[in-house]
Length: 164
Image (cartoon, rainbow, N blue to C red; front, side, top):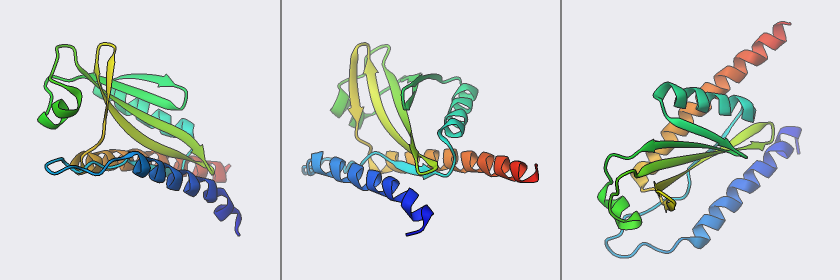
């Protein structure tokens, strides 16, 4: 087994175990329920520091509040209205309701395992959102933009270091 394969093995195991855990905990959708998907994630070929910097810069440019907590970055924004499918899970819209996105960044074989979870926050109450296929696709697109930006920064750093 090559060194790269040896380094990627823990990452692969983390992804497989995560999918199995989520699949084992999820119930089958009932008639009329929307299909919901597991937490989107990707492996970024850049260190955690660079991935976090990309996320932080993007959030600040949009004016989104961001908090660093352990392996996660928490982004919160006011939610003006609540979609019907979210109301079915988290209850009717309330004044002051926020959406919370938690982006987890975990070192993985020389890179970063990046995943996203979403919540609705009503004061002290927090409701986890299982993503619809449409929301999961939007999440994957956002994660892929973060991945592309972080990997480009890492490529430039490596190229600059090679010139030294």
